[in-house]
Image: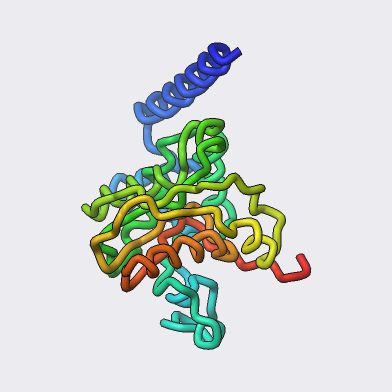
Length: 247
């Protein structure tokens, strides 16, 4: 049974590889609308029109949530400041950005991590000294075969010429966060992580694919701050609005 699963995964990866590199030999077309991409385009896989879907929009620099204009700290963060200092993101969880996250996470299209990092890295104006990522429990990592946040983090670190280290371990398996409200997510993650090595820098960035309530990174931030880190930033692809307590 295990061999059959491995063979199936290898065939799936080969099919994606052939599709990707066969496409690379053809004239450049936008992956979203299929229109031609100009030779001088900033991105080689999105046309000028579709790049508008992933263009920067006004957000609070502290929490990363949408705001009418760019602000360093929104009213909510003034009242209840998060444990991190800055959120850098590409956009909300909506097409076409969400489809790229989905392809990486659930369809094993590993090369999407490089594309997502290509969108995220230029927005990081004050990079941290060290990049790490949100960990998976070993059972989920074994089942999925990879950690999508780590893949994005490695690509961002490469683009920013920064070191990457695994700093955390998820020591308790938790139920999926999806569908839970903020309070339920906090309870679900209590005691789920530990720091696995000392941190000798003052500024660390944690990479996650999607940031919603921030419950996961909040626990990780506390571990870093308790260990002597002075400032923690969050790098994510999608920043989504938080569900209400009644959701």
